[in-house]
Image (cartoon, rainbow, N blue to C red; front, side):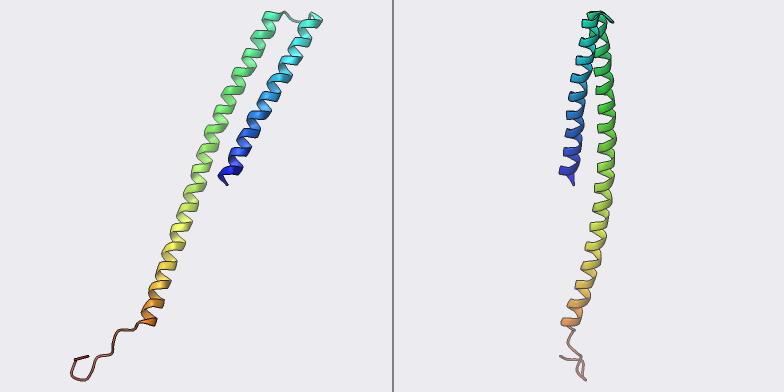
Amino acid sequence: MIDTIKKTLLAGVGAAVITKEKVQDALDDYVRQGKIKADDARIIAEKIAERGRREFEEMSAQASVKVQEILHRQDAAVTARLTALEARVAVLEAAANPPPAPTRNGEP
């Protein structure tokens, strides 16, 4: 499960890198066409990159919280199952090893 989450986050990072490259390419095209100045393109690229970093950090934090919640629930479920199994084992052990029956005069 942890591997799936890691892969998902890494895929998000990969998508962010591709998006940054596409944004940079689009801005370069606008500069070549004379629609914006190179300095303006650089500022826009920086703003987009910063916003992407913030969003990624926020999503990472939210994902971390969710993962912790899932692990906590799993831990609670495992603990409950373990407790139930221990109780069953105790019952089975008691049935398999009954205490010796007392004799008439109270001696074994």
